[in-house]
Length: 368
Image 1: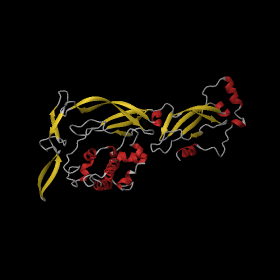
Image 2: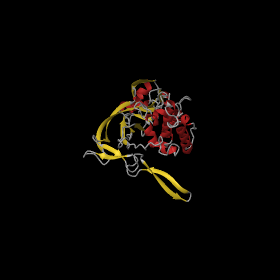
Image 3: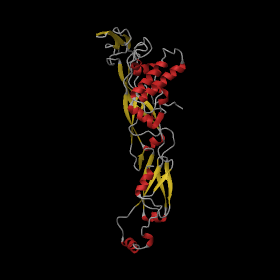
Image 4: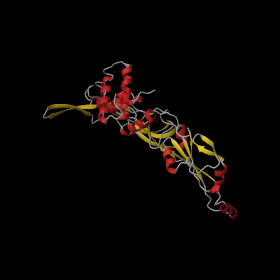
């Protein structure tokens, strides 16, 4: 079972952004590879801290994590944060947090800045059935990849470091700072040779089919990440990520409310009076329910575990069946005579019992 992100950084769940950043910097320096050479456990803790920080430092990701836990990011397809990144990936994203603690380059001392390719974004439409059961989708994306035959050479401006040192005179004296190399953009490399069909960075567009495993229980608007399936970076850089936005297709009969589903069932006067069995469309298949004779309009039947699975694997929601007795709008002569004859019949006069709940009580029960 994965360790809680707040616990990894040693902060409370109501910690501020500044407290989270400070806690991550402390953990990153403690487990930094330069400080713990060859220590696999320290390296693992370093990656875990980066994963925790990647999520908790982003307000939207943090909100999803607080609501759904690790399942919001760690679907079967390898969605998630820093734990799936290599060291270069971590240094390229969060290196500025280390400050000058390790040479000021964001990675191990003397290492150049690693460039990461840009992210790609796509939208995937899912039916309610697919959301309820989880699904694997194959999508075609156009990615920028390094062209065959392209070669790079060390940047002469920064000598492959990706950064240049600048000395500035201030009232406090001469201050030395490092900035991203303006010639290579921090990559430490420049194009040497490239084919005619490649762009200025040695890239070409290529179609690729990407398999995305989407876990059950995702919600509309949620974004998942497939690592390293974005655009390539020049030279020895690392690819960006593929960001997958979920769009839920509205179901014809079922209405979703979190993990619960709602279904409007319409029955006739005769069916309400005599009782009837009905087949209900649920995401797990057809479900047969039995309505007792004399059932009242507005009755809500709760079918346990027939809703949407929780992303945290804490079971499933319920299916709430709302019974509506359909009043005929047109009557023939015989039907009209029947109802007129029974207008004063004691069996047709409303006489709610104490056990019959009001509309407001039913709504309260639904949300309790």
